[in-house]
Image (cartoon, rainbow, N blue to C red; front, top):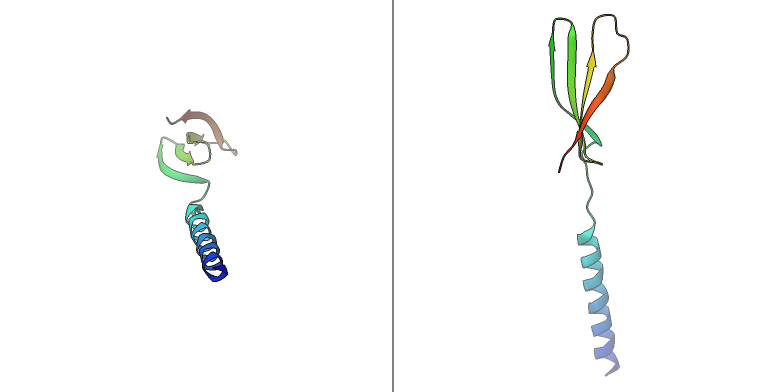
Length: 77
């Protein structure tokens, strides 16, 4: 009787361990991914997707502008 109970306990612990490991998800993508870019007449635009908050950002730079401006954003449903 003790052996059957011990085997049942061990089987339950193994099943729970497999279940717990199967629930973990490793995201190998970077947090912010570039999704496109364009340029014309000295102005450059780039679009980025932020997976942490499901938002798309647009950034721009141009002639004489040393910094990149990322003001526009939209949250995806």
